[in-house]
Structures are given as structure tokens and as C-alpha cells.
Amino acid sequence: MKNKLYLILTAFVVFMCSCNSTSSRIDYLPCQVDEEEDWGFVNAKGEVFCRDAFTNQPSEVREGIFFVKEGQSYSMYQFDAKNPKLLLDDIADFGRITDGLVPICKKDSRIQIVDAKGSTKFVLDKIDDKEIISCAPAFEYGYLSICLLDSEGNKRYGIIDKSGKIVIYPKYQKLQILGNDLFYVKSEADGDELQFFIDKAEKKQTQWKNDLELRDFSEKYVVVWRNDQFYIYNKKGEEVLKCPSSSKVTTIHQVKNDYFVFSGLDYDLSHGVMDMKGEVILPAKYEDVTIANNGFIAEKKNGDVQLYDTKGNLIAEIKDDIEYLENVEGFGNLRMDGRHYYLLDDNFNAVNKVEFDLITTPTTYGDVSSEYFDINAVIRDAKNALESDLKNNIGKSVTSLSFITSKGTSKYKSDTKYVTYWFGRGVKYSVDVTFIFDDKILTPIYKEKKVTHEDLFWGTYHTTEKVIDGYNFNENALLKQVTIECSVPDSKKEEINKLLSSYLEEYAEYDSGGNLFKDNYRYYISGVSILIGPYGDDFASVPVTF
Image (cartoon, rainbow, N blue to C red):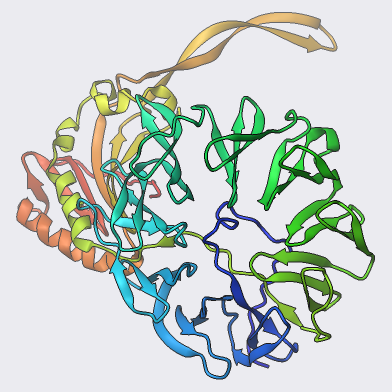
């Protein structure tokens, strides 16, 4: 029997972006008809194609496209019932095709957007000399969310359109595409986190209240949290429903069509269904509930499953012989009894009598990450750190180093002698600077405290003891050494070591003992780290993990 990858997802997870208008329909799901076979595909009618064709489990087929792992990377195929066509290989990461476009990333490359024929439409190149490190798995409403790192190493999100044009510059802490011209963003101002709704011109949509926190959304509705309570709005910002109190509705699990699944403290966190008028369709007494196309799948605490129509009328009850029944968004219903899988129509009836050994639910798509590695950027950041005035602080007290003390004592561990911060960041690398002191950088502040003791012989008695009541920076802790550490992929370390060594030999000079020095500082390279200390001193080991 060939090697097989078994992946069974026993719960259908609804993601925030799964219900919007751009979610593409699934053409086929991966399946194995027999235990001894490899992978093929099945459609919603139960018809099997490409039976026993793939050793590894492929993704579902959307818009005629699927992906499958082959060797150490993934390949992109165009579906054909008899002979699928290979479009691209050597893919490190991929997303979900929507409206004929899908983000992928080939090994050692930037993210690119390709069409259903595998042709590159555009590449996610630098923006203002900053690399795009990732993007959303799919276009939503014609837009794709992208992420880059700002000058301080923080993730910032923006949006591009289907042509690759920037619609919203990447500057927000968080960003969610809610519709054709509606976006939810989080930003910072004077240390405060702000959240608001904007259009593609970045004009704030004033019909939305400022204190709304986005929790979920669907094609028609937006779910927000405000004043310890759930509210549901339409896409125009008009309030549709103020949900019952938080004890009644603690969590909203799924929003679909004109219904939502909820649970609350008053119901022991059981699940039920409510409509957009606030009327309870199913009481909150179930272990789990899923909104299907024509009704609801409700699992009881004893494992039995009940099927309801959209008015809450019981259609059928399945006992004992079912392990799970779920709705696969964009495809249909899937049922497992014992070791066999069956496909069901919208009315929960079997589409045929074929028994499958395994049918898998859709791929869980995360952000597509860039594989591009800019070795010149690493060397540039390392050089900038080396040539900066950081080393001129060697020998000074920690209390004189404003870039440390300005953060306050609460930012550091009480027993640390090391302080590390990012000097530069990019795709798959960071350049970090570590300051090594000759003593702990914090000293405790003590106060007297009365303590009551209980003793079998002496009874109750009281003492006064000193307890720690905060910390001060230790003015006696002197900076002993500065280390510049390049955190990079293992495959690049040898090349970076050679480049850094070559540069360091030009930057400094050798003394008679073979030590590199310059301006009364000694330099030493260890792997991809440059150590800087006073001339004549030995270097300290640095037990810091980057």
C-alpha cells in the first residue's frame, strides 16, 4: 500500500472571511473510496474522479484549480477528470483562488499573484523599500490585504486591488475587508489604540460608533461588541439587532443568511440559534449547532444529531450510528457513520449509496508568507549597527542609557544582565543588538511589612519583615559588551559569516596578537554575531535565544 496522509477534520470551522460574497464554491473534495487506495476527488453528486491518482492529499478544487504536496514543495494543477494538468511546481506557500486569482509563493521568492492558468499577473514587490512579508490567503470583494514591517519592526496592514495597485497604504495595526467599500481598521495615536470603519478613500464612516469592536461578519451583517454586549449591523452601519444581555449571549459562533449561532452563561454555554429579529429559533441547549443551507445541524450532549428546517421544525433525528454530520460551506453536507463517509443534499438525504473510506473538509488557509530573503539587507543592517554609536556606551552605567531606562523597570526581569532589541527586520531575518552588563540591571526596593504567623507551640505571633516593593535601575551595572546578532535561515549562515568577516577585516585592523581592534574597541565574529568590547578584555558568552 502506498503512503497516505490522513487528515480528518471533525469540526467545521467558520472563519471571519468564509461567508462573504467572494467565497468561491468548491467543485470537488479530496476523497479515498477504498482504504487501500490513494487520493482522488468527489463532487457534490457523489461522482468520483481521478481515483487513486495522488499519493498525498490534495486541496479541494475551486474554480478548476487545486494544490498537492509533491516532494518538499507544492504543485498547482488544473483539474481534469482524466489527466489533471500541472501548472506550477516548487511552491512553498499558497492561498485560495477567488475570481480567477490566487496568491502563491515559490521557494526563495516574493509572493506572486497568478491566474487560473498559472500565469503571473504581478509580484508583491517592495513598497517604499520595505518588503511585503505576507498577504491574506485570498482576494475579498476584489481586494487583497498585505502586510509589511515598518522601520521599528511592527506589522502594518494595507490593501491592493486586482491589478496590484495600492488602495490603502500599509499603516494599520489590523485591517479587515468587510465589503466593496467598507473596511475595519485599528491604529495607534499617542500610545492609544483606535478602531474605526473607513471607506477605500480612508474616510472615516461616522455612522458607526467609535467604541465598536469587530467580532464577526457575513455577506450581509457585521457583528460588533460594545458596552459588554453584542450588536448586529448591516453593511450600511444601521443597527439591526441589539442582542440580549451578555449572560444570554456570551459568544456568537457563526453568522449565515439571516441567523446566528449563540451561547450564553445562562444556558451553561450551550449552543442555540437566533434570527436577526432577536427571536430564538433553536433554544440554547445543544453541544454544537451549524447553520446549513436549508436548516440547522444540532448536536445533542449525548452525541445524537437533530436536523431542523429554518423555522426550527424537527426534520429528523439520528441516533447512535453517526460520528459526525457537518455542512461544508460552498459544497454540501458530509456525514460519517463508523468508518464510512456519505454525501448528503441540502435536505440531508444521501445523494447516492457510495461509501467512502475518507472525504476531507476544505483546506484551512492562513496568510501566504514571503520566501524572499535579501542577504544584502541583512549585511546593511549589521553594518549600520556596527558603525552606530552604540559601542560608545560601553563602560557607562545602565542609568545613563536612555534607550533602556525610558522603557521603565517593568519591561525587564529582575535577575537579567542582558537587554536585547531589534535593530533591523525583514523577511526571514532580524538584526538584534544585545547589551551585556557586568551586574543585574535592576535592584530591588524593600519596605517593612507586618506578617502574622501561626505556630502550634507559640500560637499566633507577629513579625516585621522586608519585602520587595518594586525595582530601580542599578547605577552600578556597567555596560560590558555589545553584540550584534543576525537571526537568519541556517542555509544562509555560512555565506553571511563570510561577508561579515570580510567587512570586519576592512573595518578594523589586526594587532600583534591577531585581535581585531579599532578606536580602543575589540571586535570578534562568532558565526553570524559580531561582539564588541573594550580593547584587551575577553568577551562574555551570550546565553540569549533570538
